[in-house]
Amino acid sequence: MHYDAIIIGAGMSGLAAGIRLAMFDKKVVVLERHYVWGGLNSFYQYKGHQFDVGLHAMTNYAVKGARGLPLSRLLKQLRIRHDELDLHQQGFSSVSFPGEKLKFSNDFNLLRDEVARAFPHQVDGFDKLAKAVREFNELDLDAPQQDARPVVRRFITEPLLEDMIFCPLMFYGSAREHDMDWDQFVVMFKSIFFEGFARPQQGVRHVLKLLIDRYRKAGGELRLKAGVARILNSNGRAAGIELENGEQLTAEAVLSSAGLVETSRLCSAGSQPAQAVGAPPTAPVGKLSFTETISVLDKPARELGIEETIIFFSNRQRFAYEQPQDDVDTSSGVICMPGNFSLPQEPKDHLLRITNIANFDRWIAKARSAGSQPATGAGTLPAPAVGEAPTACAGEAPALRDYYAAKQRWYEQSCADVLGHIADFRSHVKLVDMFTPRTIRHYTGHEAGAVYGSPRKLRTGQTGIDGLYIIGTDQGFLGIIGAALSGISMANRWVLQRDGAAVEA
Amino acid sequence: MTDEQIKQAIIGIISDIAPDEDTSNIDPAIRLREQMDLDSMDFLDIVMELRKRYGVHVPDTDYMELASLDSCVNYLRGKMAGKQLVS
Image 1 (cartoon, rainbow over the protein chains, first blue to last red):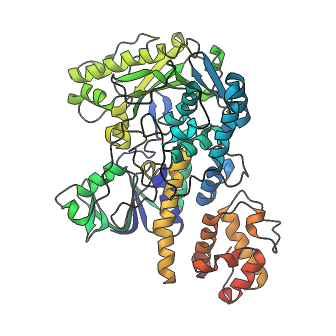
Image 2 (cartoon, each protein chain N blue to C red):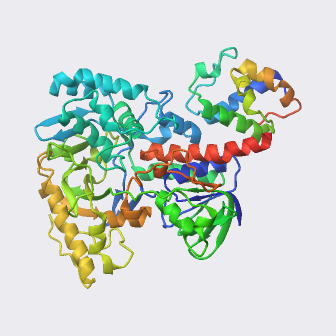
Image 3 (cartoon, one colour):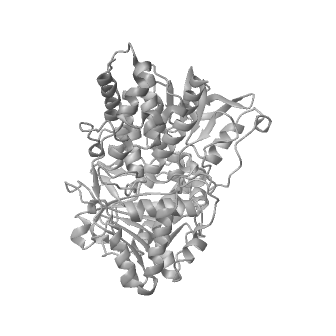
C-alpha cells in the first residue's frame, strides 16, 4: 500500500498531523503499536474506575476569542470550536517549598502578588523576568540555544525563588536535568504562568475522542496494534516502513512521534546498513522518568481541606530535578486534585495523584524476569485502607513480586512525603493504582521511560534523511497543546507546503 | 462567479477555518487580520481550500493579495470566472 504520508504513533502530535493531512485529501495512515490511542496521554479503566495517564491538566489555557495564543492556533488548524473542548479552569495551584508557598492561577497577577508578598526585594526582578519571557519569540527556530538559569539569575537573585519558579516548569516539560534551554523555559513559563491550567470534565479521553472523530471524518486511516519494526530507506530517502508483522507500507513522507533516539533505532534496525544511507543524528536518551500514584478517596479532596488544583512541592530548599539514585525521589513532586478544577459536575471518582521522579533502570531491574507486559491494572496495589490481600501477586514470578512490593513501599513513602503540603488523606483512600517508568516505556515506547524524551530537540523536524521528520516531544513543543501544534506545524511544513511548492513549480 | 459569490466563497472558507469567529459583519475594505484572529498558518489554509474547492492556485508571492475581502475579489475575479460556488 502506498501513502502520501505515514505517521508513527497515535498520540497528540500524530493525530493532529493526521487530521491536517487528511483534511487536505492526503492519503494518510496513523500507525499505533497499542490497542488504544493517546500515547503519553492515554486513559484506562481499572475496577470500574476511569483513570487518565499523563494528563493532570491542559496547559496553555486561553479564553474563547483570545488572539494569537497556542490554543487558538490549535483550534483553527484543526477546525475545532472552543466550546467543543469543554475546558474548565483551575481554581488555583501552588508551589510549596519548606517555609514558603506561592499561589498562582490563570490570572498572572496572583503569582506576581504572591512573589511581592513573599520576596518583596525580588519583585522588580520578577517583573523584568516576566517581560523578558513575554518578549522572547519561542517560535523563532534560528534563535541561538542558551541555558535558562543564567538568564533567570540576571533577574532573580534569591535561590529559593529561582527554584520555586523552575519547579513547575521542569516537572511539566523538561527533558534536561538541573536546567532547561531558555526557549523551553519560555514556552513552559507562558503555558503555565501566563496562560494556565484547564481540563475537560471527562479528562483526556474527551480530547482524544475529538481528535479521533475529526481524523476519521476527514478520511484518515488509523491502524491499532500496528507496531513499526523499521523505517525503510531507498537511496538515502525514507521510503516507508515495515510493520512488526512483516508487512511493508510505502510513502512519500514518514512523520515519526516515536522519539529521536527511537526513530534513529528504527532506521538502523534490520539488515540495512543505516550509516550507508544516512541516519538521524544521535541523541542522548532522556534520564527523567516518573512514578505516579493514583488514590481514589472516599470524599472530595476539598472536604479534607485540600483546595489547590495542583501543588508542585519540594521538601528541600534546593530543588533537585535529576534522576534519583534510589527507585523514586519522594522529596519533591506534583500533587494533582482533578476534582478541584471548576467542573460543572463533581467527578464520580475523587482522585488524588502524586507524581515523583523515578529511576528507570532500578524499576526495570525489579521486573526483569516478569516479561514485557506490565499491564496496568492487573496486579496493582492492594488498597491500603481496606487492607485487601495482594492477590494479584500470588503465583507470580519472584521478580514480579519484587516489583509489586516496591510499588507498595513507594506508594506509602510517596503519600507520607506530601503531608507537609496537604492534609493527611491516607485514611480516606478506597483504591490505589500506580504506574512506574516501566509502564511509561510500555505505553509510550520512549527509551528509558523518558516522558519528555531526549534532551536534544530537533526544532525543524529534519532528521538528515529526506522524507523522514520528527514530530511531538522530541521536536521540542511541550504539553498537549504543544505536541498537537508540533504535529500540525511539521505536517504543514514538510507535506502540505512542500506539496504546494511542487504544484507551483 | 460574481464578486458577491467570491466574497461568499472566502467567508465560507474562513468560517470553516475559524469556527469561533463571527463572519457576519466583515468590512470588505479592511484587512482580514485586523478584524479577526488569522495568522500566516490560517492564510495558508485559505490558499489550500481555494485549491481544494475551486482548483485555484495562489502562489506564495501573491498571498498579500488576499489581505481583505475587496482585494480577494480583485485578485480572484479572473481565476474564479466560470466556477460554481461550493457551500
